[in-house]
Image (tube, rainbow, N blue to C red; front, side, top):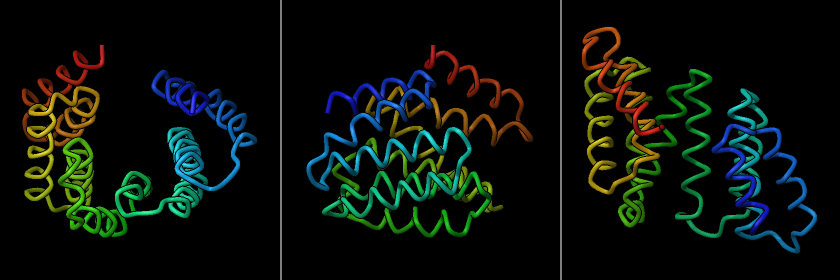
Length: 185
């Protein structure tokens, strides 16, 4: 548990290679496949996504899914797979995964996770050319994140909205970029 938390802290601070080293240390302590092995694989996937090793990231996310026992514990890895698909410009695949998560009633039990899925879904719609639906979902996500004080998540929402508005409304784009910067600092 402690090594997983250390790896998470390293990732928040941008040390993805160090995080992978810490996760590798944690591997030999595993006695069985469970939520810890799922978490380790998910963090390996995040590190590889951030290092633009997209195929490796998807591999680790799929390994994490194998160790999850229910739909709730599968949601983060599925969401992360969709994010990689967005980076790879595989928008149809991303939309399919994110829509399947959004259909799960259990998502309503975790507003922070729901906001993340809504934001990624909106961003995928926007990137795939469905501008109005994308904007609507990204705004809904940003409002939900403000309601629940999800500061860390609202950075991503604001960055997505800043990118969206960059071509049509430079003032709104700057406001969202500034908001993301202020929250991050």
